[in-house]
Length: 636
Image 1 (cartoon, rainbow, N blue to C red):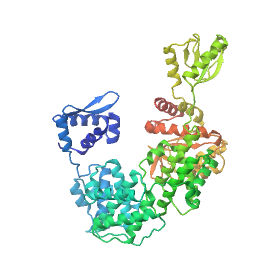
Image 2: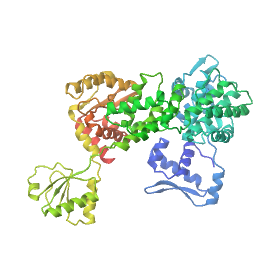
Image 3: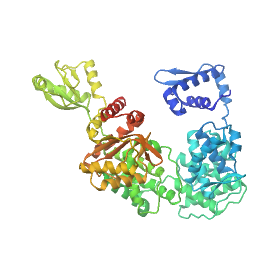
Image 4: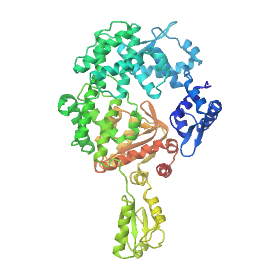
């Protein structure tokens, strides 16, 4: 069976592993749900004579239903061959990267355009991102008239770039044709796998699956480059353990066999660094030098305690976990080895408070060291810090439901009802217990809802009537009110107001915006004069763009006197580094309210998940903004 296009082949592959709803399929394939339904229909027509169909199950999604196991098994043995022609923009960029990294001669865009059935202008548009990718590795493309374009840079950088790219591609698709057909010599990764495992086992070197896979890819890249006459030169690394040194020597021998060429000492030394940078340490904290890893761990934890009010200094488990991770991390940053972090974007979006704490601490430490710790490494540290925060603090702050209990029966009955409610719903906070007469005299109710033992008039909050021995239905009605998420709506009510809201229609740059907002907060007494400088410094470290044109500028640490959120809508957009921000929330968080900080961040993550930016941007008043915001947080 041949698929008429690559998207159908990708859809078929996705549904082989698990049932998926059409919304998730549309997201992964970057198409509409209507296109997904059309593709499913096309797939089912192709599978009609192969004993299988994709059926839609309510609550689960599309899943594979096999009606003839024999015919479907025959189809599986004759798995369709992956198309070797890039069809989308991201695919073309990956193919261009591999072509430049593996070509021993100049390339002409006209030849590639003819091979891939696209226009030369299309490839010229793709080249901007290709050049940007190469710039990260200090590689450059030079164009020579009548000859074409050729990549220039150090051999170490070329190998690093190619290995990082292949590592990313293989995480997306283990059978990616660029990895298996284009970039590496046929059969080499398979030949390396067994030899590398035996070597690591022999010398008792523990690696994660991703670490072992990366070294295998690097070795396969080295085999191709060495075979084509591009060896490493002038590199030494002696500060590694004996077992790493011996393992690197054996692996160099294996590469020598595969390339049929004599390897230089530089090749073996670079292998030492790669192994040392990715091994999993099994060391007691006392065996790790306090001059490097220990100093950094202590600095990070002290910084978080001083600037964010979270004391993690006494967490022995966190201290040991950070030590073992940072020991190998320092090897990586010393030799500028990039370790891809596939979870980086998720870490930024879902753990923003832990991200900001760790980034601020690492950036402060970076002022006193020659090492530059990149975002991928910070992301790994954030996971350790996040676990420590969850162990010691109510980092996922929630506002518990508050209830007014109206009861005119005896004291013992009141206590029985209260005990029963707390046993059934321990998160419930009974703030007041009053009589029917007192209730009727109230102008309004401050609690979230009212539970009464008799029928009473509704005021401004929901009322549930409950007998002293409640029925299942009555408990179910209470449960519906208890389990409603009130944290995000409460945060909106508490920290967002019309006085800290503005719409900017005129052109404005980032610095002017910061001066305007911070100046207003300073005049009102929410922040001091050093707040603006800290916001500018934080933005200079890494962009505070959360995603989808939503930005969260803030200071390094909890510097505000009182917590406030300044909301800015910019329909025309404000330049934000390489992106444009349309919805900006300037955060000023005080130390006295640090426990609630995570819930404030979670509010913005909800906007992102709900893809609310276009609706928020279109609002023309604070009331409109609040209506859209409440709709978003109420659905989540």
